[in-house]
Length: 375
Image (tube, rainbow, N blue to C red):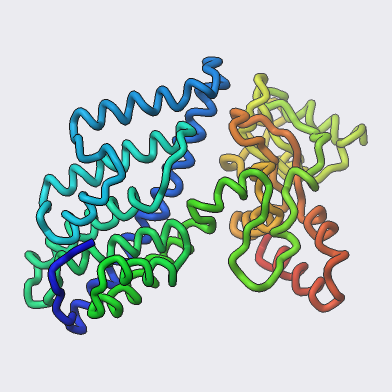
């Protein structure tokens, strides 16, 4: 990508490029979430309206064509757009419109199941967004010395580093394709900031999220966490004892006192007549005498349900239990309209992890689950 020779950035400009990397990293995490959210919508389209998956790319192509009528530069590979953004030949509102429409076009066709790349579209979006923010920073505080072209270069590499989690590859690739030695330090700071921000906001990359959804554990750290290797659906109890939200407390308390099957559990998902989950109650909640017998179980539910999907890992379930301070999580199948397909508790997590731990490590895991106020 030919761009004019860039000047050595000052310390203040380098800090600005680092902050730009943080913003671009947040955008990269949002892009990953959005692309897969659109894919989920196409799957719901098939489930709800019976549209066969082979028609989904055609629907995506209609969106791509309509966007192309508005902005023809969104069509094609887009290398010219990247060069224009980095060289400054396209800027301002025109560049921002191109970025937004390119993202709409690319995310829809990718989510519809059409084969397509991620490198050039991400470079177009990141380079254009970086140039726009750089120009805004230069007009707002010209003394800092921010160069819109350098900001475009940082944005181009940073968005790929944030979306793919390939930090060093993004830096080297941006240097090789522009041959700007003075850009190395801004690239290092901006891409590192984008990578850390994206990793903080979204654990998986745009390349690995699909594998994770299929049950393949993809980890970037060196330590192997057994809980991260096992899916919730493989451990959760499938025979879930639920309580109808419309039942009165006197009926629920009589059932608890009867000792019938499942009545000895410590927590129960509360469901509506259509099977939709509205919350979880404990034995203590049901036996709380501050609620009269004629009240319904629905009145005892204290907050919206905290759930976990069956394709999540046990590590996700354990972290959610600690953060939400609960001892059990209803398991909901993805795209199942809130219907419970299982339940998992702290004891299930400990039982799944215990064979992999020595005594000291097992004690540490128990403390992580029990000592932070989880009930």
